Structure formats: structure tokens, C-alpha cells
Length: 394
Ligand code: 3PG
Image (cartoon, rainbow, N blue to C red; front, side, top):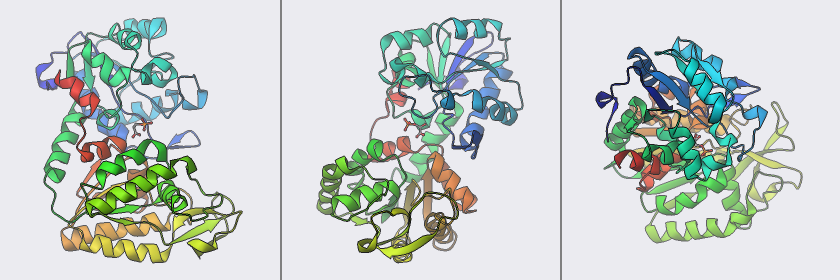
């Protein structure tokens, strides 16, 4: 595909798809990795005299205008990290967007409201893609981490305008290819987090590409429930039990060892400092929920990490944002960092929450490579063609 090297953006309206789906707590951004990742592309285009128009989604508003999911919250931190002013338009298409673009000086940066406030975005509705295309002269995709979505702002619009890969997109594809195209075996993968329904299906392919799969977080609860464990009030998608069992069968067939929690830290409420206890899986009370892995699980994880030569990690093992339930994720992250230093383990991690969790554990700088992508990183690892990348190759 073409990169910014073949785009002369001076005086042009350049639509740039970025990923500003950043972790946020009480309206404050808690990790700036994705914001920092888009700075090179935005700065380069602005310095070359483009009108830089940023398209991005935030969270999953499902086609409705949800005020708590407004990208207005990201404008100030973005401006600060860019070291330039950022204008904001209250809609990502139509008159509000067009007027803001008309008012934007060359070299200026404009952030458009959440693309997912329109149902046409996730449906990749041609009318939505055209509405985006109407706003620009060229399209740059710098959101590797959203490239697994065939949405109007990632895939559709790329087919309607001259399209280019941004610097972050280039760097991600380069780095992942270098680290993981022919990984040293055994390869261990850690998959956790709360996005169970959108990630679980890809595990079926992943098990044929890795030698060990450590499952944690809400994802693990779904697998445990599928195996008959009473997970009580835990975050769990019971209707995915069949999928979970299919994945376990696929893993067995592929010779991939699956590591599920054998003990857990549980509590009756999900809040900081909640009274918690460590229990065997058979001892979870009816009013309790699993919020972290326990020490016996960590011991199994340590053995897996010690034998692995390559480790890929997406998704925390527990509710790491709230103490004491950060313990499992933090300890595992520190083990991974130690083996990176001492054993030459190649460690590649990705995903908004994962990056925040590694930073929280104080080990982000010890990992071999940190990707801005979560789901996209896993799909890339599965060997899938990412629609957002494919559209750039048209
Ligand atoms: C991510 O956070 O992985 C990307 O921004 C994509 O978000 P999504 O999983 O809601 O599509």
C-alpha cells in the first residue's frame, strides 16, 4: 500500500482514521498510548499544510448518541499530547462536520465526534462511507487497532478516496511481522479481559497457532462456566458455553495446552478495597464474583512463561483497575518482564487495557513490543486479513 511518502497533502482535506478508544475512568483518560501513537502522522500532515480531519470511534454506543461516549472528552488530552490546538465538530458527517472543516485553516487539526453515533458506521453502509468521503480529498488509515473492523470509517471510505497507511499503521505492521511472522516456539498466548463475545471466536483459530493458551478475566469465567463451574455473580457470557467447548476441543486437536484458572480471588462487590478472599473454584459463594486469578493459577502461569520462547498478551487476567484485584495481572506481567530480561523471552502485548495494566505493573518498557491494538492484533495473529488493511491495498 501507499504511505504518507507518496501523499502531497498541502492544501488538501485529509481524513485520518485514528483509534482514540482510550481507557477512561470518571471522564479522565488513564492511558495515553493510543493518543501518542497518532501524533507522528497528525503532526506530519499538519506540518505539510493539510487540513487534518480525525475520524475515530469511542466505546460501543451502538449507533446512538450517548453523551458519556462523546469524543469531546478526548479533545483536550489529544491537543496536549500533540502540542497543537484541536478543533471539535459535534457530528462526524453532514453540515456540522463540513462547516468545521471549512473553518479549519491549512495545518489545523479537527476532531470529529464519535463515528459510532451513526448506525451506518458499523454496518459499513455505503451511504455512510460516501458521507465521510464527501468531507475529504484523501484518506489515511492510522488505526491499525481498528483495522479488524470492516466499518465505514475504516474500510468503506478507503475504497472511495485515494487511501494511504499512516505512520502508526506502518510501524505496527512492520513490528508485528518482525516479531511474530516466524515466532520462536513454544509460543504462549494470554487472552483475558471483558470483551468476551467479540473475541471468543478468534480463539478457535488461535489455538492452532500457539502452543499454550492462558485464559483469564471475563473470558476465563465463560470457559469455566462451560465446564460446569458455578461462577455465581462473575462476569460471564453463559450463552457462549457451546463456543467455549468447541474451542477447547479445537485446542486439544491442535495440541495446544489451555490453561484456565484453578483458583480465584472473589468478592461480593466490585469496588476498591472490597473484602476479598482466595478460593478454590468449587468454593465460590452464590453472592460472590471472580475478580482475579489466585496464587495456584499464577504458579501455573509462571511455568508456562518459563517454558515459552515467545509470549503474546491481550487482555488482563482480572479487574486490574481496582486493588487488590490487580494482583494477578501485575504478578504475571512482572514474570513476563523478568523472563524477557533473563531468558530472552520475546514478549509482545497489545490492547488498551493490557497496555494500561502493564504500565500499572511498571513493566511496559520491559516488553519486546507493545502494540496499540487488541482485537486487531489477535486477528492478525490468527492469520486473518484485516479489512482496514486490505482496503488500503485495493
Ligand atoms: C479496540 O479497542 O480494540 C479498538 O478500538 C476496536 O474497538 P472495538 O472492539 O469496540 O471494535
